[in-house]
Length: 161
Image (cartoon, rainbow, N blue to C red; front, side, top):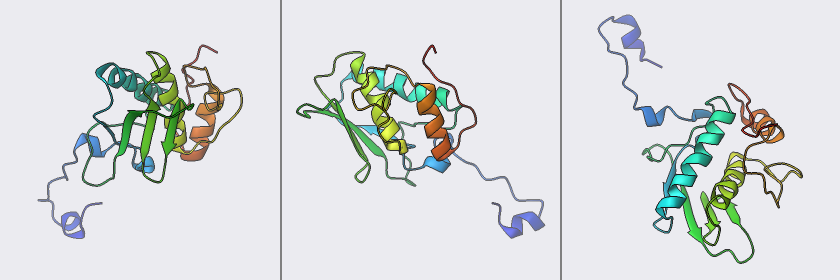
């Protein structure tokens, strides 16, 4: 909102807003992600696909920026040993850990699922959010749950349903 003085005087310039700060205002706890040094280049690439899937599925409503702004505490994405779990989302500390033993393709699937937890979704049988999911895309039920929880411009599953 512009200051009252600017509304009364025609000489005030419009405020300049950096693009990375425009993303995900209603989900600012998920908007920014930094990669831990443990994340390999191919894992970073697959992470980009997971971020893009969520952006597409929600009609551009959920965006993930890899450049943290000073206004929000970013999420950290890291690879690690999880002893039997494929991934873990720690909402309190804003850390997503993907088991480093996940191969190509599995990394993207696990990150899609963990990003669902970061948004606020719980486990739902038969969907991407199933605790034992093998779904490499965002299904309609998951998109609807995310949009019901946070609001979306559009709802598009990334699965061929």
